[in-house]
Image 1: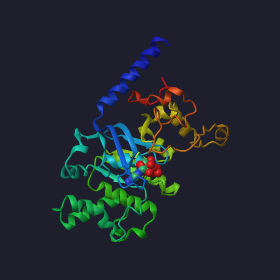
Image 2: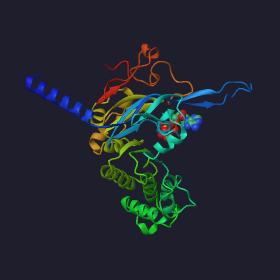
Image 3: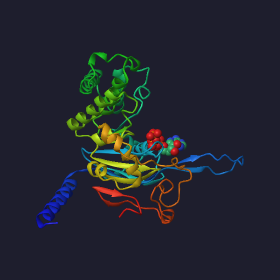
Image 4: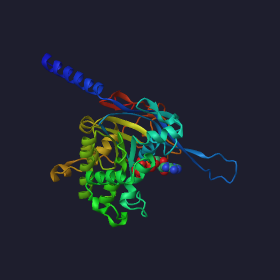
Length: 347
Ligand SMILES: Nc1ncnc2c1ncn2[C@@H]1O[C@H](COP(=O)(O)OP(=O)(O)OP(=O)(O)O)[C@@H](O)[C@H]1O
């Protein structure tokens, strides 16, 4: 490498470091663990329940205005992790530090206050809305709960403003959710999530239940609202192309563990973990010739049970390059904020 190239690389690294240092850290999750008690099948009444390790030591950082995508196959713990962040399921270990305060240790009342700053959008838009309430009431409910001092007129004004922001006509305020399409219902869900002016939105597969054309509209809406309101997003999805489009950084989960995390460009250009490589190889390429030439790395077998995860590296039972040593030592995430991987065989 010539001196000029070396200097440019060093300058690039320094600029990246500064960019990270400039940003305000909103959320820092350290070694978060969530377990569910699964009743024993034994007839012995005192048999202890088994522990299902849904999230097994996940750590992330999220900065102001940033979008973190979370991917991984069904059952790897994405939704449980998201729910644990806002206390919808209790964590058995670890911390969720939101603007310097550990949410897992906050009393209920204080946690409830913090919930104003972190909102969630759910997968099934129609099922997540109360069918007996009008659109206006659904969007206004969080406002009435947290700001009971607001007058009816003030609430209605804010609701109408928010409806316009998310692309709903304010004159449908008295209609019911069943009168809307899936995409419109998701807009109602987004309006409800935004009405309290949160700093972060957790989107748990917000577009999976929608038609492809509507998916694009909802993703674009989320992106423009993010820019306008300076929101941070945690975006959970199965569709890697959507995650690639919307995320600044991507975290890959497997059986409750983080296997790789990194800036979207780096992770998609050069996935390091064998599981990420297999996931990426399944993304369709919008070019029929390249798509035909592409080699899909098939993973053998099913996701092991989180009731009895493999020893050492949890991916070793399906890993095409696993060695005997992978059964003995559990890998930890190594690398920096730009790209880190959890694999004993990746330097
Ligand atoms: N309330 C619960 N009680 C018992 N087990 C649960 C509960 N919720 C989730 N699990 C289990 O925890 C594991 C992780 O589930 P989770 O729903 O978080 O996965 P996911 O990655 O979000 O899946 P999907 O993409 O299908 O939504 C699964 O094995 C699931 O069966």
